[in-house]
Length: 473
Image (cartoon, rainbow, N blue to C red):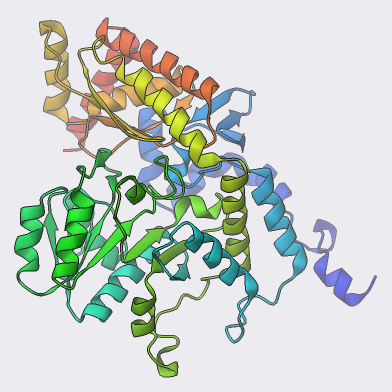
């Protein structure tokens, strides 16, 4: 064996790193390690609500525990696992790119994979011309904010109340949730307007200092869709005042809502900048992308002196580019978008049909496989008193009461859509089908039956949540 071969084939016996052995030895310490060295509140929260599971493996839309029990994933890692976990095409692409031993990230050459991925992305974005690759959704938003402020020469960016665009300082400046912003001022100049309020948008634009409006076509928090016609009208107003429209498609893009982008549901909407991430990674390698018009990129990168005026150390790395190319290939070859459209409609319509059956089920909304289930105040006296008990302790506890038995009794992972919201958001892997829809609806129906019939398993846990909420005040 040559020296090169020996160096590239480390083993445990000669002091090499053995990941399998490490996990076998220390994997059981997962919650203790996190509590000691990372965010200590996460394991505390998981223990409190009974989400402190130990998942051994995952594939597609499912997890399995050590006893072989399967768990249906209706969360998809907050949308990252668009193709489910460990899709074989994405796995093969990553094996291939590692085996190719490319001369990656030399900084002073042009590798083919970034150009190829940009070309494939832009094929789905015919009004856009260029791409900047970063490492995450918040970085894609940061790029859009910087580009918009530079090319317009204006400081202020408008955003929508209740929006979520990320948690780094620039994206936090356009985050519409005060709980995330508190304590991190000063932030960038910004102003919130209500999603759909064109009069408020027009008032702000008249001040002449607005660079852009950034908007999620469907807000992740609460799953609220922009009203029909709003995006196009907003675009026209912005362009009239020489400001830009930024579409944050980090969660809604790449097929999530039944089109490649959510803004494509409305004719004539052509954002100046579009942010994507999450599902583009294939669930493996973090990647974010900011797509924009040619004139914007040419103004930002106006000379060779400015060639690195905006860059990312790990942006365009070969593994991320390979994952992205594989994801787009799967989406096209397996007709993922069409499948999302039909499966999403089946899931939404079956859930909506339950509204008349359950007085605490107020609304079912969304597009494709981005669905919000909202709960509301019941009419009957007995249920109303229990609802009031929960609301007095903390708004959002009923939704949590539904999420917990879905996991503990039915082995289905879901999430409450935001703090103080009585909304469950479903963003499952885009590959789910009839079997998963039936399993979720059957489980949800069982939990709602229990809640409306005064079942102890649901309401006793509600009392636990109330005690916890009061103790945290």
